Length: 445
Image (cartoon, rainbow, N blue to C red; front, side, top):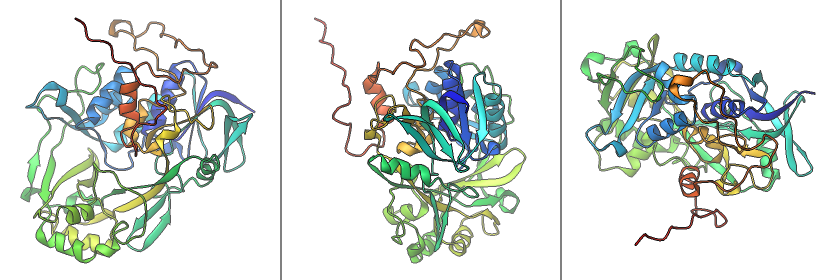
């Protein structure tokens, strides 16, 4: 039976960053994911960055992470948000070509030393002497390691909701992870259900682009990565349209089809990404809501209508979409849906993201109530990634991590306030009482 230092489960944003970070630190690392061809897949909105999130992409880049560099290779509409304001509140954002990003991520991971990649549906953990010792897949194969990082995204007992449909899935076309969820519940962890949603995907050739306001990319795109000199990918424009009073009427009349308002799920949704049903109910005084029509690739006719994620039936989606200017004759490539999944309360974790109840097990991404983008750069087996070599010395010997691979990591963060601000961003009830707190330095006189 093969052994590794670190096993990472899941090949989304958080999993890719965790696997690459562990391998860079010198750990023999295994990345396990359902399908090799979906590593680096952008499941929902094919965009990276934005207000607040763009800062985190650059922090990931400063820690030698992948996201910033690969976004620079796949970005097709770079825009600096809040450009007219101070530098501290500007937000770099780019629409991403799904295929280019996926291919770039797979190529990067395949070329990473110390990293092996395998296709397997992990369904359980190996636990020995009160700590994690590896993972077991659905076929009964065992993979042993002293550190295991779970980055399961929306796969833990995931269920898709669309009108009256209920489909067990981690995302469209992929099976959920049932056994892993049962194992986490068996540990006595405080867990719950969350929901997120995605809009319909539209056929670009069926949109009346000539009737829409168009938003071009910046004339001089600003890269995410400090190692990127300039953006070479062709830039495109996105369309802008708005919902109408008729759109709102149809949704309000059929609100019972919604997964949330129809009482079909209990999971809470993210504040920063409300569905169109949420907008109609919570902002009833507004006559319209803005929609960005974002192409998903340079050679892909699929369009992502940013701003109208939904879980109503396919019939209702057809009806309300065709009340939107420019979409009167639109064709739908794939209908929108909500997905509900299990998460672990982040108060069950140390600041290193290690599970308190099971030493050696770490969580990153949406499994701990994070957006995958937020958790990815700080995922890993309890160690800081190596420092980035200077630009003029990229071929130099990498800096080794200060902690040994088999030593137990210090659970106190060097910068606990900053770490808590990132890892507890969605945490209910505030910061856990046992979290370390930095003492304020006395003022100088």
